[in-house]
Amino acid sequence: MGKGGQLEFPVIRTVGLQGMLVTFADALSEPSNRATLAFQADVAMDGVVETSTSLASVFVRFDPGSVSHDQVRAQLQTLLAARDWYSAALPEGRRFWRVPTVYGTDLAPQLAEAADAAGMSEAQAIDSLGSARVRVLTIGFAASQPYLGTLGEEWDLPRQTALTPMVPSGALVQAIRQFVLFTAPAPTGWRHVGQTGMRLFRPEREDPFALRAGDEMIFEPVAREAFLRLRERDPDSGGAIMTEIAS
Image (cartoon, rainbow, N blue to C red):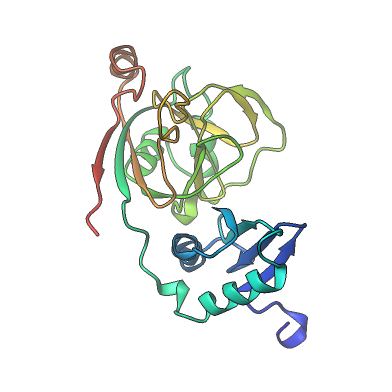
């Protein structure tokens, strides 16, 4: 604890019998997410079974039969002290995705509501959202489902007070300066502003997750008719194009 009982980050917490959680901040920020991605990439120690990230934390699951909580904590503390994680480079192997997206129409019916809440016309909202280059901050909630950000302050919109009963696979939804790209049909409290044809979870493949934390994306506006043609021609990616990001 720091002064006034405030936590000093990063902090290590015990999670059940076989987990530790390394948290870099109590809220999302560029430095805390950068630290999270970089730290996970460097966690390699005996007894660790898997690691995963949230927006600002790394979960480490280990085998308590081969290594103790104290041993894992000590190794994590040593790794934390090794460098300034908040200014670390993003992981290698990241990709940049250009994803054709239809905004508004009957395929993404809450664009007008979101635009109004942001103080924009629909055309201005499409220009703003369609030109934003965002990063995959974490994968979660559903298999291969990304949280993406960070959008400009004008998009710091609250979640809806009621759920939208269902949005389809490929739905681009928005709230709190972030996008979520839905991997499967589901209800949501975020506004459905865009629709893509990108299939994110592909269980038939050796690597079933299309995206990785750290990947970057831009959701380029296309007309409804062009979008439907792309989705019919390429039902796997809906016309999305991927290139490697140079280290």
